[in-house]
Image 1: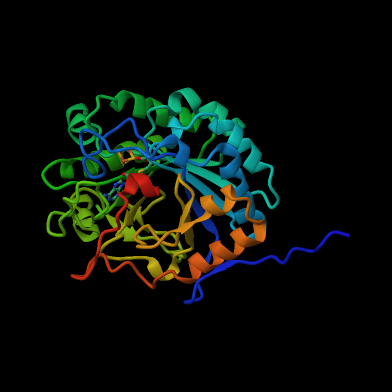
Image 2: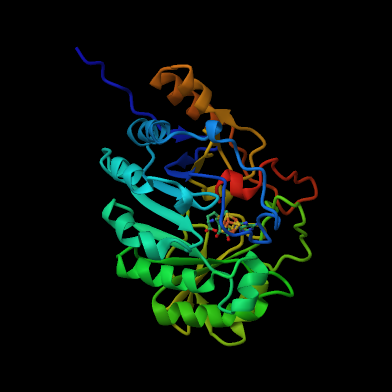
Length: 336
Ligand code: SAM
Ligand code: SF4
């Protein structure tokens, strides 16, 4: 006789239900974006600590089949540095219910892998691009790879990984002048651009509130050239506030992570590359699912541990307050 398994969800004590799982596939990266990590890189996680493909699949299967996760987003570090990614995606796509799958990438290897990623069942990509100027690209990422990113974007559209979204971070004194050209470029190519406020998640801990370009300032920068009006539909759990550009149909999104936080509608849970659940980017606590897996713990034990981790989710991140404490892990090791 088979036992009926009770379906459960990842509900926190404020009633929010997490259905969107962010999975970091690696903490390594082939760029060194200055708002993320230092020029010399970081001490990467040792290989033995990183979840194997089977371990990752086991946890994602539990999240989808037993915990109500409906969308899985892969990130990092740079997720396209993960070996055999297409095989992992193909296994996940066969789960029931079938999750939506998307990937946040710096785009460098997209040109090479976009078709295989689409064939494996990946639905969409977000590509990070902060400037169209080669020198400023090098100044921000410390690598001369702008052309690879632009051809990666085009390959993503060709492969049907749409809508292709572009994430841009504006840095004072470096790329404010890129806001308008980036929007023109994205509108012309059918990419959905979102500007993201710089957050205190850099490994160097150099973020400063006064240096950050806020969502309001970004709107003013764009407003010098475009007429922006708030999109009519409700925002739901989407982090970006959407604006119609010159009456539409073109749009731009602004993610005011610091100044207009979207914590009240947050539907995310996170898994790091070394198997730790985090209820928030800014959590000070992690729940170690890798240890449960490696000592042969039961699936029910993992379900309970994951649910307990999410029960402890705080109401908000308080990034814009004096008492804010930056998490120990930098963004690249959490998964942005
Ligand atoms: N390497 C991939 C990429 O760059 O798209 C995925 C990981 S990256 C950590 C995910 C996103 O976080 C990128 O869009 C990046 O621009 C953004 N990001 C990194 N550090 C940030 C920071 N301090 N503040 C705001 N966004 C940041
Ligand atoms: Fe790498 Fe993404 Fe961080 Fe840039 S933002 S260094 S591409 S992980």
